Every structure is written in structure tokens, then in C-alpha cells.
Length: 263
Length: 263
Image (tube, each protein chain N blue to C red):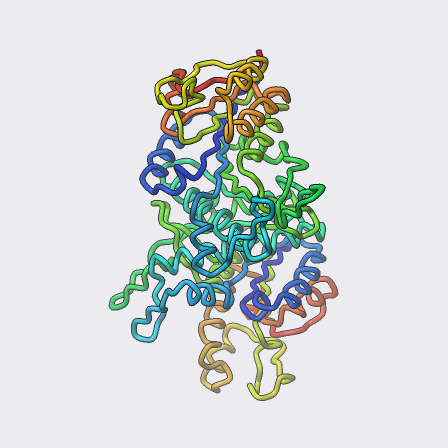
């Protein structure tokens, strides 16, 4: 089975022009077939403020109303996606940008929740692995914005972490998937105060222990749950790391960040 | 040679939710392989105003500065493109949206002009016909936003009329191209005051006569020059018509609007 590299980057890279450029240079040098999923960053919030859309919170959770959906569609699928694609093209990486609506490549449904109506938020139903496999086999590099659709004409705002996990799972039916889940730290830290206390390896059974020991807490819980889910559904390995370390890990087979495996 | 339908729609359709939906229903019913190029409409201007970007004019011509480029990239390649794609997907049309940067499908250069710096405006160098042919042969329907790139990482704002003509010309190397150039009127009018005075057929040699007779004037001149250029470079026919008449022309072989041919 061929190895495919799936990378997810978030706001800490997207919001920083220089860090983004540096990352894209690295990403373009990954020799394996690759997919990039990008989050949104602060731009959408800034634009919403500028045009006077107030954030709607229900039980402390942000709601995607129609105007906010328009903003995230513009910023994620338009500005961020196309800027990344244009830069990668200049680096001899044949990038091609998508939302989930394009070619029906990622379909979702409006989130169903017993008490909260999240608005136009999508939970993923299906990733069209055949479509992406065909592109990857032709050396195209898909760049995915966290916007999906429901198949009935409605675009939906979608969590980029979940999307990256769903993409990794779908591709693992066809490839050996290494999923580089980038965030602002260097990996899972044994001591959150010590940047150099990165745990090198975590197996799925160890996750519960790390939760009990309060090493995995707060915002790390959904990230790690996403990782465990991906591994349980066939993804070969998940590397939780900083974007600056992806290239070293992939091309030099180094071990920066925390590598999660099923056992 | 297989026939391909290229359709260009502009602001009169894009700015009107109901007219757009109606058009997209029609477009989805076109049986031939098809490509849609959409312009921008008023949304970008509205958004620019909302966030306080003032239009920069040099010699009465609008300049695309960096902030304006961001806005048009968001609105054209993000909001408008993805809304069209999502709607077409719900109509069983396998739409897939692109800017010219994606897969390097339409490359341009920053406009060179002896006296005016137009800013980030692109004049098209190349349309990757092989890329589009491969998609069309697999029943995908490309939906193109009027944003291109220069291959060096720079996105560029590009005239949608010119883009549609360039697309038609590029595809005519491989297909018999019928280019439906939609605008707000029913065709080229003999008397601009009479909506029913549509000239049914115009050949390229007749264009100069119609210009001399002041039937082709003002804003019609660049449109008709675009049409003549397309025909001279191999496009089979160009139909200047209203978007509401495209489906009747294509599927029923009717003759609404003005059909331009080389002879």
C-alpha cells in the first residue's frame, strides 16, 4: 500500500503570513502524495466584526447563522484556500482547492443536537475517497477548506479537525495514511508548562490513562478523541506536532511531536 | 467532434437569487458537456463599501489594489462559486468550482499598460484545455470564478467575459464549442429602444458594418470584439442572449438571441 500524507493546519499558521509561507515551502517538498486541510483562523472573525455581524452564542457555543456562513465561505473557501493554492503552484506543487460541495467530495448534514440549534454547521457523512484517489494518482495535491454541503444546495460550516480525520479515514481504505495533525505546540506535553516535555509515542489504550492522569485535558480531549477515532478506523499513524516539524518527520523519517498508533 | 456548451453569466443573474436559481435549474438540464463562467456582480462592491475600502480610479478606470483583490477573491471564488456549485450538486449536476490558480488551469500575467497601473488585474496567457477536457469527459461540470494567477503565487482579478472567450477558444481545439454569452438583453438589438428588435444572425464581416451603422456602440463594442476574436480562433458559434433562453437554444435547438458565426 502506498503511503499518503494528510496534513491539517490551523489558525496559528494561517494567521501568520510568514509562518504560512514557510510551512507551504515545506509542504511542497513532501515527496509522498499529499492532502492539506486548512482551518479558518482569525480572518473570518475579523471580517464579521468589520461588517457588523455579532457572534451568536447559545450555551456558550458559537452558532453559524446565515451571514456568518457567508463570511466563512468567503474567507475559508475563497481567500485562504486560493491564496494557499496560488502559493503552492509557484512552488511546483500542483495544488487544487476544494470545498466539500465541489464534485460532492465531502457531504455532511446539518448538526442534530437535542437542545442547541447550531445553525449552518455540518457533521460529515461521507468523503468521496475515489475522487481524491484519482487526483492523488495524477499528482494533484488537494487543498481542502472546512466548508461542506448537504447535497440539497446548502453549504455548511465544518470543523477542520474532524474533516481532516474523516479524510484520513476515507483514504485509509486505499492507502497507508500518515495524518499530521498540526497545532501550536510541539506535541502532547507531559507537563503543559514545559515545552520540551513532549511524549514521543502514545497508543490508543494509553489515551484513557493519560486522561485519568490529567495529561490530556480541556481542549486536548476532542483532538485526541479525533485521533483515536481515526486510528480505530484504519489510519496507520497520527502525528500531533507543530507545522514546522512536518517535513522533517516525513522526508527524514525523524520523530518530532507525538506519534499516536493503535497499539 | 463533440459539442461543448460554454456559458457565461453576469451580474444581472448573479445578483438576483431567484433568477440565479432559475438559470441553474436550466443549466443543469443541458445534456451536452458544459462549463459555466460567472462574473462577480454587485456583492464585491457592497462588501468593499461595508469594510471601508474606497474604489481607486485612475483615468476613470477602476484599479484592483491588494484589499480589493482580497474582496473579489472571497466573493467570486468563495461565496458565489461555492453557492453555485452547491445548488448545481442538488440538481444532479456534478459541478466542481475553480479559480485559475487551481491545478494551474488558467494562467495570466499582471496587466501591462503604458500609462495606467491597473493593480492586481490579470490578462490571460493560457487555459489548460487538457485539464478541462479530462473533467468534461468524466461528466464533471467546471464552474469558473474570474480569478486567475500568475504562476508566481499572485492571484489576479480577471474579466469574466474575456475568460469565457479564452475558455471557449481553448476548448475549440478539442471540441465544437457553442459559447452562450449571456447578458441583460435578449440579443443584439437593431434599435436599442426596442427589446424585440433582436438581430438573429451576425457574421464576423458584418460586425464592422454594424459598428459603422452605430448598432454596435459603447459597452457592446468590447463584448462583440470578444465574440469576433473567439470565432476567429476556432469557436464554432457564439450566442449573445439572455440567460433565460440558454436551455431552449441548446436542448430545443431554438434560436433566441443573436447567433454570431465566422461567415
